[in-house]
Structures are given as structure tokens and as C-alpha cells.
Length: 94
Image 1 (cartoon, rainbow, N blue to C red):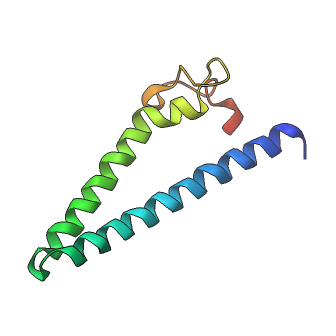
Image 2: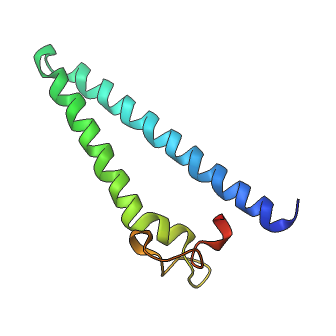
């Protein structure tokens, strides 16, 4: 394995680990809020958490991936918003 492959593997691992932690946090928040409200409102709380996760996922798709993996100045990506750019922008992930 060369350095580029190791870097790609670590980047992918980091994104997956972060996603798992965020999903776990959403479940924890749902349980906390459901336990803090009356039983009749538990469905509303679950729906609110699903909507919150959906909005966060769309925000990551719109901007987060480009900031993390887009071409830029080495600190923050400046290209690839809404994944509109081609393979050239995210060539390290192919």
C-alpha cells in the first residue's frame, strides 16, 4: 500500500466513524426527549429526530463533503459544493 491509499483508507474510516457517532447521538437524543415527555408525545419526538437527522444529512451533502474533501488550500475545501464537480475534484476518493 502506498501513502495515497493509506490516506484514502483513513479518510474513509474517519467519515464512517463520525457518521456512526452522529447516528448514535440522534438515537440518544430521541430517547432522552421521549423520556422527558408524556407517552402520547413519543411519536412526535421520534419524528422530530428523524427530521433533524435528514436536515443534517442534506447539509453535509450540500457543504460538508466539499469542505472536508474538496480542493482548496490544504485546510478547507473550496470546490465541490453539492457534489457538482466531476472526478477531478474528488480524485483522491476514486
